[in-house]
Length: 231
Image (cartoon, rainbow, N blue to C red; front, side):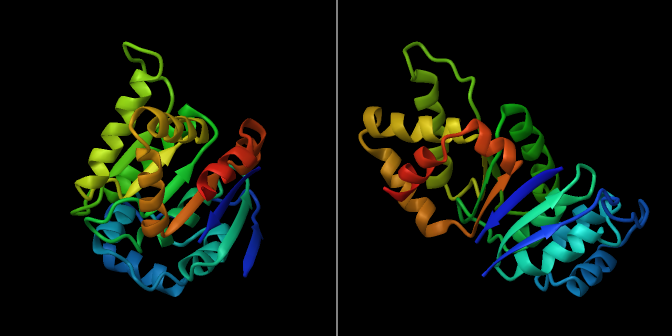
């Protein structure tokens, strides 16, 4: 089983293996999806999100989605614990993505324990927000290379900073190690720009998701992450 913590009164929801949501068919209408989501607590359903969900055959929410969506839609800090294939990812993505505002950077931060999982999450989010005007995603993972130690990571930071300055990167998907490394490098190499980014995060973030929480805590020093975010 996997867990996701959505920050943003706390609740814990446990779900079985379940199915990820009963499909309504390839010709599902987005207004039908919107009606279903409203019934399960997501009151502000963006047309682009309803259309994207209809395209992937989303119909009746799975048990974990039905339990989690109303809480997350109302900004309740929530721990979602469910088996793979239960629809856990949509349980937190749908209500949070429905709140995103166009041309506003750094509204949602999703942290995952590995590059592979981060890339998979980025692909899923991109599929859902692809039809939205003024929304984009920035993927922040390790593996960058540069001509000098840390050079590739600083280049990654400059790219993110440019995206934020251009009012893009509404969603940031990252591994904790990549995020911390870039903030630290930015402080020392880019003249303290890491603190500027943290200030923007503090002002703009609507939600933080810690996906695969058990693996995330096992692979990351929570004190290091908390200390840097609290500076």
